[in-house]
Image (cartoon, rainbow, N blue to C red; front, side, top):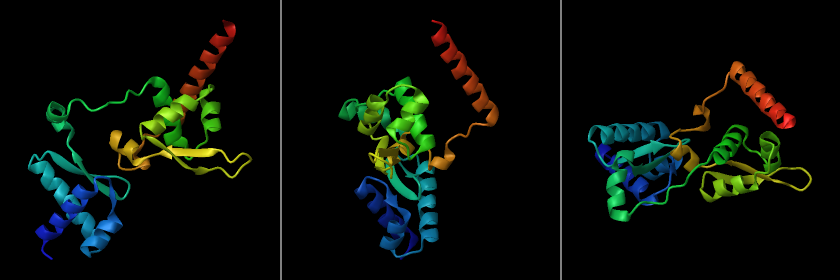
Length: 189
């Protein structure tokens, strides 16, 4: 099969599926190995950027998805009205950070780190599609485990969790000192 026809098949798969499609499934569909398929997709990604198209292909944890370029958002809202945008408050961002870095994690573990109940925050993050139940902990009561979703990767423009920033030990110590100072201020009040 010629390259244009293979890329056309890939484009049709990604467009039709809407969500991300695993590389292995795309490779099987076009009857090529994963390395060749990945090269074809990366060539398509480059071409889409060069040609200033309204869509792009993104890579999400060994899967690919076709989506609208951010620059085209203003044109979309003129047609479809403004899509519902979720506001991530400080509480939601804090909870999401804990889940992203500690996953899989239980609500109890989240609450131990935050120091307050986190039911509402976790439920909102699930509702927004940024967090999902990933199973149950093999412990008394079998509490739910939570982790991030592909939507989390999309929203924060990272290909995988490995791309999340890492804190160095100096930053961790600084944060601990700030938390201890804040805790002391609450005790003094």
